[in-house]
Image (cartoon, rainbow over all chains, first blue to last red; front, side, top):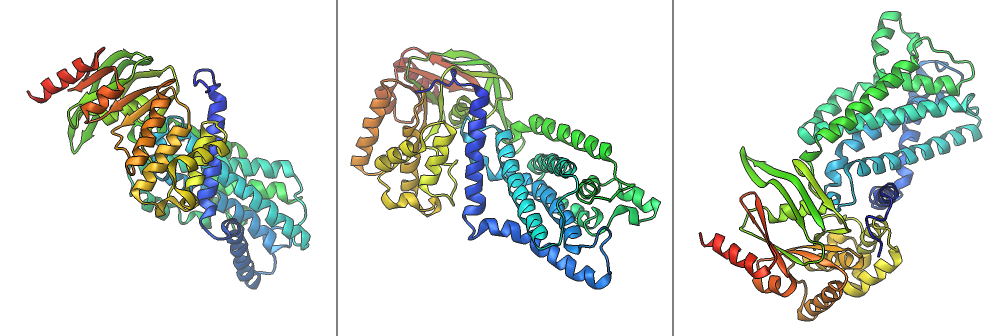
Length: 260
Length: 218
């Protein structure tokens, strides 16, 4: 028998999170036939529809020559953020039963779900962009390092937003509906199918408050060899992410008693 | 040993504040089986969840110097869409035990047969309880927390549960809530009475039961 005192608490925590990730995978993808396929199909369909619509409206995408590549950089990145922010909102409710296990801490279920979603989307990114490259619709990213940094910042932005949502939802369940309404325009304001520099300065200024706009713009700056954005403000994005994470984790700590 | 340091726990329900523990400081000895007594609604189950760490105190600290189980017989952590095997595997992984060993123990003990591979939501409450009991017995703890375990299954299965239990008691201790004084006397040497926010510890289980009866007859 292993004594609780003798075990390294950090290793115990890692083990618990590992078990939670595997459990979460089972719960998320196990019940649906071809569960993992859907995760891939969603951005594929989204990109296909936008490509179809926009190739009728205009001749060239805002950057480069490939419509699928331009929309894919926007859609997958946006869906990744949105998935985190909405799935994490219900993370405590969905795992309330688990709290009876003394080993499971609130932050563990958050980290487990975050890990699974991030792993899923990294997989989606790799599969999707590999396919585009194979079919000659895209080049390999010009600066992979920048692309990965952009993905990491979007991941942390989603974590901060999702956990903040989760805490508000805990105190006020109607928040789930309100949040859905408030954030609906986000898809149209985050530069999924446009680049911010195409707008006049006063509109650009308003758009630039949205951190996701910078996330997607940063991703494209890394992916395209010659794309430069006058709107992109990386320090703003990183500062926003940091503040949001501090708010998220401290409010979780503050209101933890409401759930256990 | 389980130590309480200034532990306060209150509940607010429809505007009425109920005090479960009012600044409790106490050490429960680690080498005794202890009964927890108290009137209905005094907060015995809450106290047990506090000890398990499934619930947090409003103030103060609870120190566990040994591996404490979750409140036993509890199956709320099971996921309905996952099978018995998958749920058992999750708990095994979490506690760092060999999943295959735990699964075969649970299969053997719970006698669920092929149902072990079906989603839990298809289980009857009796099957669920057998799975939950099997999983808790498969993991080694120093303290088992038992909240009103109503033995599950037929007489033969009850006997099996009791045998496993007696076996466990050789190396482990229990904290038990039960309305049956007979159960308490059989398993516990000491007892605590939870009354109006205070917890009173008695070396001798008989004293605890007497005190409990006295309070109930007031």
